[in-house]
Amino acid sequence: MIYHLLLGSNLDDPAGRIAEAIQRLVAIPEINILRQSSLVQTKAYGKIDQPDFWNQILEIECGLSPERLLDILLETEAGMGRIRTEKWGPRRIDIDILLAEDYSCQTDNLTIPHYDMHNREFALRLLCELIPDWVHPILNKTTRELLRSLPGGNT
Image (cartoon, rainbow, N blue to C red; front, side, top):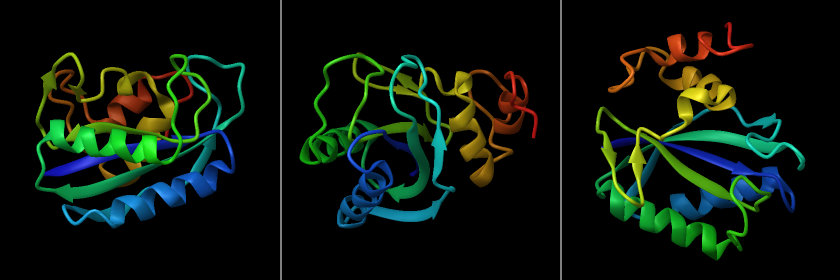
Protein backbone atom coordinates (compact mmCIF):
# COMPACT_ATOMS: atom_id res chain seq x y z
CA MET A 1 0.00 0.00 0.00
CA ILE A 2 1.15 3.55 -0.69
CA TYR A 3 1.09 5.77 2.39
CA HIS A 4 1.73 9.48 2.82
CA LEU A 5 3.32 10.39 6.15
CA LEU A 6 3.64 13.90 7.57
CA LEU A 7 6.77 14.50 9.63
CA GLY A 8 7.08 17.52 11.89
CA SER A 9 9.43 18.88 14.54
CA ASN A 10 10.00 22.17 16.35
CA LEU A 11 12.53 21.26 19.06
CA ASP A 12 16.23 20.38 19.21
CA ASP A 13 17.33 21.04 15.60
CA PRO A 14 13.99 20.34 13.89
CA ALA A 15 15.42 19.81 10.40
CA GLY A 16 17.92 17.37 11.89
CA ARG A 17 15.14 15.52 13.72
CA ILE A 18 13.25 15.12 10.41
CA ALA A 19 16.41 13.75 8.76
CA GLU A 20 16.94 11.36 11.68
CA ALA A 21 13.34 10.13 11.44
CA ILE A 22 13.77 9.47 7.73
CA GLN A 23 16.95 7.48 8.40
CA ARG A 24 15.15 5.43 11.04
CA LEU A 25 12.27 4.72 8.66
CA VAL A 26 14.65 3.75 5.82
CA ALA A 27 16.16 1.14 8.16
CA ILE A 28 12.81 -0.65 8.55
CA PRO A 29 12.73 -3.47 5.96
CA GLU A 30 8.97 -3.21 5.34
CA ILE A 31 9.18 0.50 4.44
CA ASN A 32 10.35 1.76 1.05
CA ILE A 33 10.48 5.54 0.62
CA LEU A 34 9.33 6.42 -2.89
CA ARG A 35 9.33 10.23 -2.84
CA GLN A 36 9.71 13.18 -0.50
CA SER A 37 8.17 16.64 -0.53
CA SER A 38 10.14 19.76 0.19
CA LEU A 39 11.24 20.35 3.76
CA VAL A 40 9.57 23.58 4.87
CA GLN A 41 9.40 25.79 7.93
CA THR A 42 5.83 26.54 8.98
CA LYS A 43 4.00 28.38 11.74
CA ALA A 44 2.65 26.20 14.52
CA TYR A 45 -0.89 24.92 14.01
CA GLY A 46 -3.47 24.66 16.77
CA LYS A 47 -1.30 25.95 19.62
CA ILE A 48 0.45 28.92 18.05
CA ASP A 49 2.57 30.21 20.97
CA GLN A 50 5.54 27.94 20.26
CA PRO A 51 8.49 27.78 17.85
CA ASP A 52 7.92 27.25 14.12
CA PHE A 53 7.81 23.70 12.84
CA TRP A 54 9.72 22.03 10.08
CA ASN A 55 7.53 19.69 8.03
CA GLN A 56 7.98 17.19 5.23
CA ILE A 57 5.83 14.50 3.61
CA LEU A 58 7.11 11.07 2.70
CA GLU A 59 5.43 8.83 0.15
CA ILE A 60 6.19 5.27 1.15
CA GLU A 61 5.36 1.80 -0.05
CA CYS A 62 4.66 -0.56 2.81
CA GLY A 63 3.07 -3.98 3.10
CA LEU A 64 2.08 -3.46 6.72
CA SER A 65 -1.47 -2.76 7.81
CA PRO A 66 -2.21 0.84 8.79
CA GLU A 67 -2.49 -0.22 12.43
CA ARG A 68 0.90 -1.96 12.41
CA LEU A 69 2.51 0.96 10.60
CA LEU A 70 1.10 3.29 13.26
CA ASP A 71 2.69 1.12 15.96
CA ILE A 72 6.07 1.39 14.21
CA LEU A 73 5.72 5.16 13.82
CA LEU A 74 4.87 5.56 17.51
CA GLU A 75 7.88 3.38 18.42
CA THR A 76 10.05 5.57 16.17
CA GLU A 77 8.78 8.74 17.86
CA ALA A 78 9.41 7.27 21.32
CA GLY A 79 12.90 6.18 20.28
CA MET A 80 13.62 9.78 19.28
CA GLY A 81 12.50 11.13 22.65
CA ARG A 82 8.90 12.09 21.87
CA ILE A 83 6.97 12.70 25.07
CA ARG A 84 3.28 13.49 24.73
CA THR A 85 2.45 16.16 27.29
CA GLU A 86 -0.06 18.43 25.56
CA LYS A 87 -2.12 18.35 22.39
CA TRP A 88 -0.45 20.30 19.58
CA GLY A 89 2.43 21.21 21.90
CA PRO A 90 6.13 21.40 21.03
CA ARG A 91 7.75 18.14 20.03
CA ARG A 92 11.03 16.64 18.88
CA ILE A 93 9.25 14.55 16.25
CA ASP A 94 5.75 13.84 15.08
CA ILE A 95 4.93 11.31 12.36
CA ASP A 96 1.33 11.14 11.19
CA ILE A 97 -0.27 8.85 8.63
CA LEU A 98 -2.13 11.26 6.35
CA LEU A 99 -3.23 8.84 3.65
CA ALA A 100 -3.24 5.19 2.73
CA GLU A 101 -4.23 5.27 -0.96
CA ASP A 102 -8.05 5.38 -1.04
CA TYR A 103 -8.40 3.49 2.23
CA SER A 104 -10.42 5.09 5.01
CA CYS A 105 -10.96 4.07 8.62
CA GLN A 106 -11.87 5.56 11.95
CA THR A 107 -10.90 3.76 15.15
CA ASP A 108 -10.00 4.93 18.65
CA ASN A 109 -6.32 5.07 17.65
CA LEU A 110 -6.31 5.86 13.94
CA THR A 111 -8.26 7.92 11.43
CA ILE A 112 -7.37 7.71 7.72
CA PRO A 113 -7.42 10.04 5.90
CA HIS A 114 -6.03 12.13 8.75
CA TYR A 115 -8.97 13.72 10.55
CA ASP A 116 -7.75 17.32 10.18
CA MET A 117 -5.48 17.35 7.12
CA HIS A 118 -8.05 19.23 5.01
CA ASN A 119 -7.67 22.21 7.39
CA ARG A 120 -3.87 22.29 7.37
CA GLU A 121 -2.53 24.50 4.64
CA PHE A 122 1.05 23.32 5.11
CA ALA A 123 0.08 19.65 4.81
CA LEU A 124 -2.02 20.21 1.70
CA ARG A 125 0.67 22.36 0.08
CA LEU A 126 3.25 19.60 0.59
CA LEU A 127 0.81 16.92 -0.60
CA CYS A 128 0.22 18.96 -3.75
CA GLU A 129 3.90 18.56 -4.57
CA LEU A 130 3.38 14.80 -4.71
CA ILE A 131 -0.29 14.05 -5.44
CA PRO A 132 -2.22 17.19 -6.50
CA ASP A 133 -4.98 15.22 -8.20
CA TRP A 134 -5.58 12.64 -5.46
CA VAL A 135 -9.27 12.65 -4.47
CA HIS A 136 -10.18 12.60 -0.78
CA PRO A 137 -12.45 9.53 -0.38
CA ILE A 138 -14.83 11.29 2.03
CA LEU A 139 -14.77 14.95 0.91
CA ASN A 140 -14.62 14.09 -2.82
CA LYS A 141 -12.18 16.92 -3.57
CA THR A 142 -8.67 16.77 -4.95
CA THR A 143 -5.72 17.79 -2.84
CA ARG A 144 -5.43 20.89 -5.01
CA GLU A 145 -9.12 21.78 -4.47
CA LEU A 146 -8.79 21.31 -0.71
CA LEU A 147 -5.78 23.63 -0.67
CA ARG A 148 -7.52 26.28 -2.75
CA SER A 149 -10.51 26.25 -0.39
CA LEU A 150 -8.34 27.45 2.52
CA PRO A 151 -7.42 31.07 3.27
CA GLY A 152 -4.05 31.68 1.63
CA GLY A 153 -4.25 28.37 -0.18
CA ASN A 154 -4.29 29.68 -3.76
CA THR A 155 -1.57 28.03 -5.79
